[in-house]
Image (cartoon, rainbow, N blue to C red; front, side, top):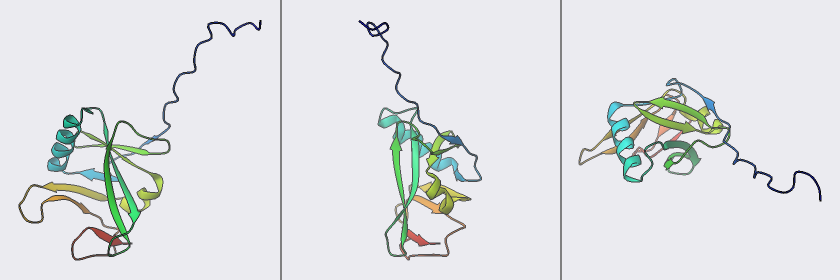
Length: 131
């Protein structure tokens, strides 16, 4: 019998390695922060995060993808804004730096809107952009 095999503790789950950024990367308006907090609470994730990513697609070539998750992933950049933890992957950070996420519950043109100073053009529906 080899010493240390019996009763050896299982390795702890690896914790994600992420960086902490600030609101110069992305900022949430007060309305967006309240809405995201409400959505996280409804999903039973009060300590969760909002992931903001940029993916290929849409009329103009790039579009935003938002998702609620339990925690940051490896290599993410974590920003706290309007009482919400927001994560952005390094590639998406190149496109969203300086952006503000707003929310409106207006009947027309309501929902989440990204004000992105890096967007060279955006489509008429406002759902996609080019940089």
